[in-house]
Length: 139
Image: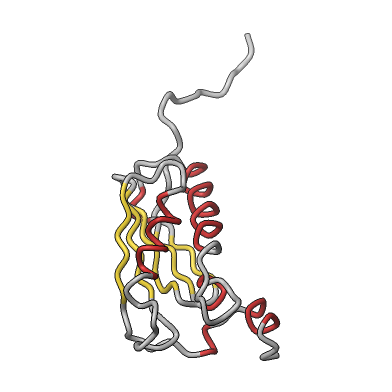
């Protein structure tokens, strides 16, 4: 008789995880009922979706610019995003949250999206990734 490892019918769920990279803060701790592999896929897909949105005055996507301050994923698969603008008087201030919402809605498995515009802390160029700095020749 051989010993076989016990297997569980329960999928592995996501631990209370916070993913922080540069100026970006992904809080997936509210996604405890979502399997870890799916949380990782959703996180990767969210980054990809956010990178499709550009500030029309700057040839760099909003993710690399550091305009995305916080992304939360809840058990009900609602994504809540805190974002900012390069300047409070940005001409697309009224439109950009909609662009972000539309991009994030393309991620498989997302049920709802809430985008909140915040201005604290104010955006500054030091929030940009190295990729953005190179693209803008701010290196």
